[in-house]
Image (cartoon, rainbow, N blue to C red; front, top):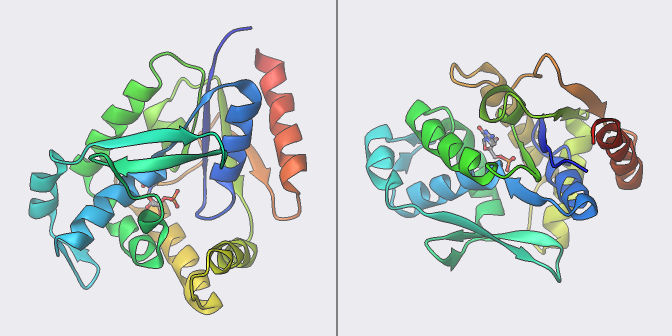
Length: 227
Ligand code: C5P
């Protein structure tokens, strides 16, 4: 069977990475979480004080960008990717609400996107890859053989994120998470550079009322039509 590129885009917290991971596992493909890369840049900016009141200093971030090396390592036991910043495991830190609250403004910076897109394309050179994000089907891999646009209602997405964070022992507030999910949707969909939108040739998957298993089956069927 031939190896393909699978692009999964969609709104914040709608289960893209959960699905992408399961799909990659099923197919024996590489999984890359493009959002984790924007989160790493945000983490570095926060640590260095390059963001004030949610406003990133573009100059400082672009200056610092060249010292950021992002790598992933597949954790077989957990069935997930671990994200590294210059060799340091930052997987937990990049998922914290503070990073979520500052990542969207940073991802509006064109030069940051250019660098991330470059690295993402490198990862896809040999195909056999599932990548999730906001602009994978539209910008990163416009020729991807399968493009999926995932979504679910904001309340359902916030509820899922709430459970995920509380299960990790983080103290979080539902309203705050809902505001974050809706706020990120707004910035991501309206930004000038590579806004979140469905690629013309993407298939839509609204998973508001689908189980993980049902979503995976739906997607595997789409893959089978191609390979
Ligand atoms: O996917 P995740 O929610 O972790 O992504 C975090 C943020 O990174 C998004 O809200 C969006 O602002 C940005 N992002 C992006 N382009 C991508 C992936 C993520 O702009 N391909």
